Image 1 (cartoon, rainbow, N blue to C red):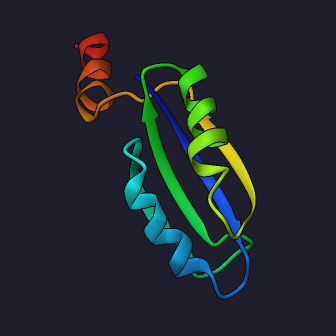
Image 2 (image 1 turned 180 degrees about the vertical axis):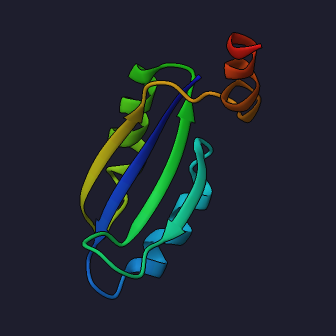
Length: 93
């Protein structure tokens, strides 16, 4: 499973309108409005492959009106909480 975060800038005054359009994109797992900084929204998307993430970003998200720019941040590896906390203990014990 491939994961990416997408930072989105919108046309001023259209943040809420753009935010609600992401409810219709099935690969969007999370959508967060941002109150400060240079971006309006933060999305988390998931797909089977990184190639598919690119198609989603271009075809599903990039075609939504009032988006002025995006920045895609692919996640290379996402260990589970169990892996993060329990696996290092095995090397110590």
